[in-house]
Length: 458
Image (tube, rainbow, N blue to C red; front, side, top):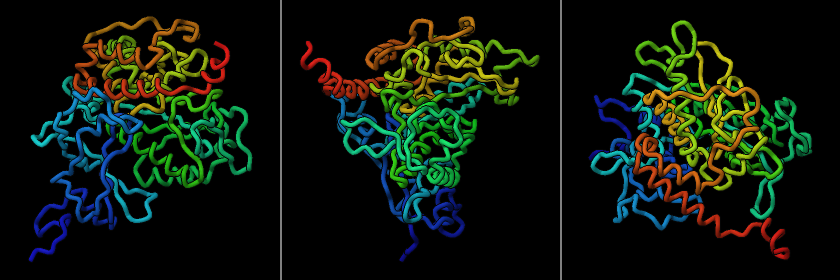
C-alpha cells in the first residue's frame, strides 16, 4: 500500500520549489491566494499534505466579478453563464511564510486558467503579465518602484463615525501635521518593529519608511525591480500592514481619502525601461541626454492616463483625493522634480532616469495600476508620441485634466481602443461591470452631509 503523502516525492523524482519549501519550513497549512479586481486576497486554506501544485485547485470564475460589497453586477456577460470553475496554478516564486500565523503556514500567489489551458484574461495578475509581454516583444523590460501611503487609525466599529488618529506610545494622538517627523514615527515603534519583521520574513524589500503630511499617515517605498515581483510585494504589504496594526489595536487603511481634513493617500509608481540585451536604460542616450523613447513614454502617459483613471482611482472615495492644492495631481502635466505635476521626473543619474506617475491612490490594485501605467507609457513609445513642454511652476494653477468621478472615468476607459487592446477587451468589460455595480450601490446611500444641509433647507 502506498502511504506516501501527496506532497512528498518518490525516489528519483525532482523536488519542486514549493514542496521543498513546505518540507523545510515544516508547513502545516497553505494559503492559496488569488488577487481579485479590488486587490483583495481570495482563495483557499489547504492542509499542506493535500496541496498539490501541479494539479491546481478550483474556484468559481465569478470571483472576479465580486464587488467590494460582496455582491455581483447585473451584467455578468463577462463570465460563462454555466458558472464554471477556473484552475489555480501556483507561481513558485511567490511562496512565503505567513509570519503572523499561529501555526506554520505558507502563502502562494496563483495564476488562473480555464480547464483547456487558456489564461483567465480578467485576472489582474494576467493583465500585468499581458502588458509585460508587450514590452518583451520589443526587447524591453520595465523597472518599477511603488510608494505606498497609508493611515493608522483607531478601531472604527461604527462606519457612521469619522476615523480618528490612534494613540501612540506617548498616550496622545497626533493633532497637527508631522511631515518627515522621526519622533512621530517613533510613536508607533512597536508596530513598525512588527512590520519590518513581517516584511523581512516575506522578502518584501522596504527601502524607506517616512511620516507623511497627515495625522498618523505613513509612506513606505519598495526597492525598485521587476514589475510583477513589485506588484506581488505591494499586494502582500497591504495585508501585512493591516495584520500588524490589528495586533496593536489599530487599523491600517489604504483608503484614498479616509479623513475629511487630512490629505489623501497615494500609490506613486516610479518607472523606467531597460534594453534586455544590453541592460541599459532606454530612457538615456549614450551621451547621457534623455532619449526619444523617454519623451515618448511621457507623452503616452499624458495621452492615455485620463482613460486609465479607473485603474488608479477605482472607488468612489478615490476621487475625493483628486482636489486642487491638496498634494494630489489634477492633470497630466509633467515637469522636472515638480511635485505638483501628475508626472514628475526626479533628479537622478543617467542610468536611473525615470518617470514618477503620481496619479494613483493607495486604494488601487497594484497589479492593475502598474499594468495601466506601463501600458500608457508603452503606447507612447510605439506610437512615437511627443509630450507637452515640461511645466514650470505649479500644475495646480492649471485646469483639471482628469476625470472627476468614477462614472466619467469608466466612460473614457471604454472608449479608448488602444488602451483596451493593451490591457484586454475582456478585462475592461468585466472591470467596468464590477465598478459600475459598486457605483450604483454607493448612489443608494444617503450621506450625513445630505441630511445635515438638505433635510430642512431645500
